[in-house]
Image 1 (tube, helix red, strand yellow):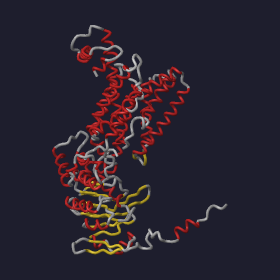
Image 2: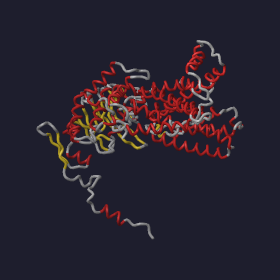
Image 3: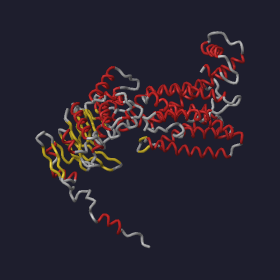
Image 4: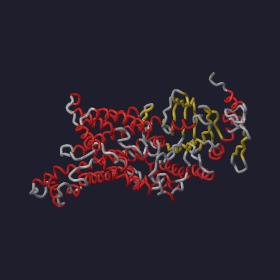
Length: 321
Length: 281
């Protein structure tokens, strides 16, 4: 992370970065002599890198949990419609601007709300006789996703070219706008939900055995599914709200970890969080260095870099057939 | 621990599936639950392992109604090996699958202790799955998987075992080995079995379900009479105990003509399709 902070439009020596961060975090050492350097490192780069790490961790963990909850290896926040809900919320605010209906609602808040609304709809429509059924949840999520997508497209028809550009960048995701007043809150949400989800690790493992067997193993499957879905929707909503629609991380990182270290959730979730964090910090680093001084949206790079590696790993692994 | 099923009624989608079913498995006994497809065997098991709440009646393991226990407490007494088999356990090793059996012994914050390791290790040894304990569960053969699932059930340290078609799809040797394993556990067992020969081989008593009600119950030879086999299963068969103590069933060449499934050699069924009047021109 320190290295990631040091690289950018202006390269800062790693030692100086360490000094600045240490000074701000612990109050130790002396304040850096150069205020510009301090500004770049502490006010621009550091929040950005921290946010990338936190968002990557959050997305990856949600993907891992959702894949087990709906027992479907393709599940992630996108498939379950959460991301499209967030997108509609964001796009509405971007295009309507200070529209009266949404007065006081920022893009982040609207995206969060959108994700939670999508989550609630999936929750309600994914039930049958009062039970949450995995296949139903996935199908409900996909259908709701399409509805939100249509609504989003319709709203975009009425947008100005400038707004469309903003929308496109939001949809492809970015942590460029990271500021210290949002980073701590997001970090706390991600840490707390990830910890909670990891505590459910043993029960998530049991869920892998199938619903009936899990019931016979003393797990209230329906309640567990409900709790996990709510936590996942909140987590997704939070990270998408600040970073936009970054795809692929939630789908791929959990599989990468599973393929290399197994599916025990007590190990899987922390490692997935870690790898998700590292991956998005790396992707963000590339996104602001590959095409200097322009920035590439994260969504373009996450899949472009990750997919080939993922496919290679898939080919090498024979246990999936 | 004794299992008592007392005047159980279960409805699914407003249809009665079980009507006034009572049965008992004495501590240490192995009781086979047999009956044609759709007679309610698996449904009865679901009420026992607390997956389907009965409309009326009680399921008691020991002295307690399982539906008045918490899911976790009930699962410490009753372990089940079911048809959803391994579920979606790709990525878990055999040892990890067996360790799932410890779940009912832990709350949210519980960590594995020596008790858990002993129970898992013991179950792995008893079921002979040690040689592939570190392999991916998904890579095992059908017979190996069933032994792993039985080990998972034993790791639960149960007082009652509930088995649903444990031996399906297994070759004959694997079946016999599995039956020996179950016998060797000494745990009170209620087992749904399709194969009547296997049921006769494994069980002390049989309970026959037919259309959601108990048609017969008792020692194997007393239950599997030619009349019952004809009435409930629609087959002509005789049962006898051989000198080696094994009860064998001999089926006649053809099922009963008035049974639900008449041989396909009948002339009318095919002709009906051909002669069925189409929509008039």
